[in-house]
Amino acid sequence: MWTFAVVAVFVATYVLISIHRIPWLNLDRPSAALLGGVAMILLGAVPFGDALRKISWETIALLLGMMIVVAYLKLARFFELASTWILLRARTPARLLAMLIAASGLLSALFVNDTICVLFTPIVLGAVLKARLNPVPFLIALVTSANIGSVMTLTGNPQNMLVGMFSGIPYGSFFLALLPAGLAGLLLDWAILRWLYRRELEGVFDVAGLALPRVHRVVILRVLGVLALMTAGFLLPLHRWIHPLSPGQRLPLVALAGAGMVVLAGRYPPARAFRHVDWGLLVFFSGLFVVVAGINATPVLEAAYRRVGPLLGSGAGLCAFTVAMSNVVSNVPFILVARPWISGDHAWMLVAMASTFAGNLTIVGSVANMIVLEVSRDRARIGFWEYFRAGLPVTLATTAAGYLALWGFQRAGIP
Image 1 (spheres, one colour):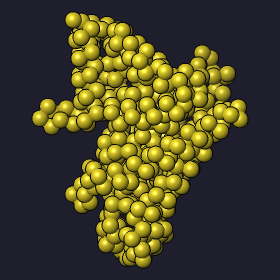
Image 2 (image 1 turned 30 degrees about the vertical axis):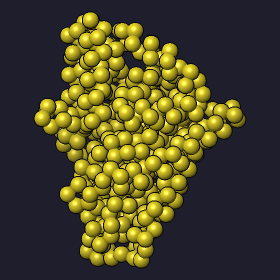
Image 3 (image 1 turned 90 degrees about the vertical axis):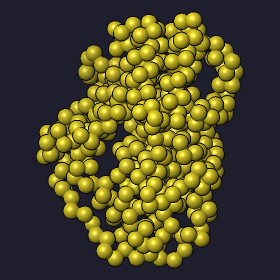
């Protein structure tokens, strides 16, 4: 009976997470994870003291540090500057599509894909509507490229952060291995969308009245300087010089140090920046760690692994299973559950790649997708099948390219 109750809480939590929101229950993803974690404690599956220890505070610290750095760039209007500059330079819809994919993908590798979607969507949407262009191909391009580009670094999206914490893969090794997959994915994304929407991308458009925003250049330069130092910190073997510091603690320590430097150099009151931190995401992660600890206290996951284990033995099978499950329960919850089943740097990189690219399959495949649709819903309707028409070929092509790229690295003995 006890096992049944724990499994029921686990399943209910993951169902609520996968459907994102049930208005009449007044629940969203973070609150569902929080309630699931509390229920696991009340059932005795995870004692309260153990629950606090089961939370990966390294992951929480990494997320928090990156959010604070991004918050100062947002306050300085860096992202408005970048998106407006692209719109002014593009001139033609076809060129805008290419520039948007390149910028969204590369910036997502640095600043987390969800952030790019939140900040770029209203600016891009407003400009393309003013130019009387169909906004659908550009919004789909924005979100698919943000998902794809984020695969290139351990700080590009939340699931990659988990992979970095669980696997201990060095930042540089991960970047070198996933860089070809990310760049090939962006190129495929452009080619597929360019062909699907070839008729909407004809001619030129007018950007009259659109001007670069006033920004705080000093703050932008300082924060970008700190970001360069953080990148160096991600790459350097700090654990050899700072004791005691494990390799898995390097990323969160550098992120928090960078956040502290940005607070000191950013000129804006810290309270203003903290208002832009996604506290709900931190609650979501914390609750999920406890929920997964609860189900791990039962024999259920071990029995499930005995059934799916043979499928995970091959790289192709692992990719296919990851794509499927990432669209059933979302990518972050899947990685938490599958953590005991994955071993070896190559397998972890495959999971990072496949879970990230899987986010492009359907509208509900990733949080970034939901952000774009939510922000644009009053001015640009993107239905399930409209999105799926682009998401299916993009997901299949990029996942296949990513698998081949990582297979080539493994064959060559790299990293």
